[in-house]
Length: 214
Length: 154
Image 1 (cartoon, each protein chain N blue to C red):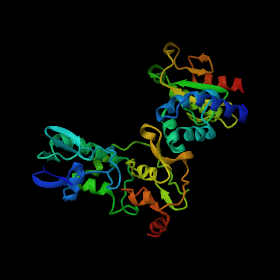
Image 2 (image 1 turned 30 degrees about the vertical axis):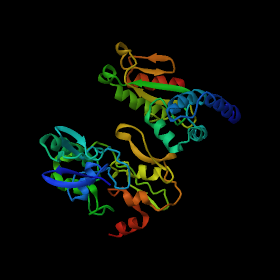
Image 3 (image 1 turned 135 degrees about the vertical axis):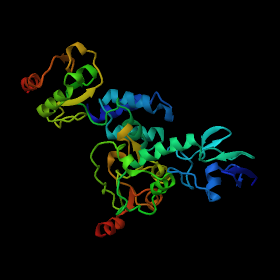
Image 4 (image 1 turned 180 degrees about the vertical axis):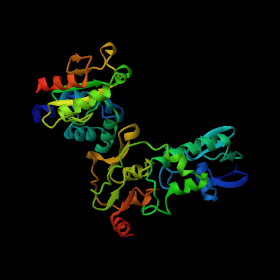
């Protein structure tokens, strides 16, 4: 496979032809913020967090293939501002307490918050008013907490290759991940959706029991 | 409408389509034209016809306001929540209507008698606040008049 050499944040990186900038960066231990990326799925580009600047243009690193000799900057004042806004809104409408969450210490949002040093108090004001939605326990294998879901679409894409059970339904603030008919019925599979969820929205039922006793 | 005639009518629609993904929305529109909403069975038939999952059909149908996944009531109550109506008290009228027919915005009553919805403007700003029930517009409402209006209907 042909190799391509490029510069990401002053670091020289060698990547396979056809790889995306995000893949090249992550393989070389350069962290570019991301939420909807998964190495085994085609990039969807919905979270908009992986923005980088290439040749004066701001692009999504998950959907831009590497090009020989280019210089990529992962932080610029423009990108930082846009990215901060995205992260703040994602966190603002998320469940506020990390302790007791099934995704605690593995959560992608925690990594994002550390990356930009989020001010939690400031972000609280961005929260959309409304009651917390009930946790969906209708599936025999896992629970789904819609209050933690960040709508990254990883579970939807994952399930599309298995049984097409999960879908994004609704619009605007009422957008949510749901099964057809709104109840979590599916053929038991390897729970790949649960494994891949970047936050604590999908978690296996045993974990729920552990959390409750904590 | 009987099960069989509905199924036949649906086949009648699908006859004119090739089975491409891009045909989903027009098919849904025509299907809603027959049944008044999108019941579960036609959704299954359409999904099979287009070779996509029922979930994907549901995903598209739930995005658009036009597509209704539950049947409409016999009486359509449309409250205006446009600027003019809002300023003169549309929220209070909504509360009063909700109490009178025991429905929240967007809901249909179990006996399929009423559907309550709100819209951005029905163009009767001089009559604000107003509500449209089926084809008739009732303007210059107050909570008391609203209560009376629904009391008289029941």
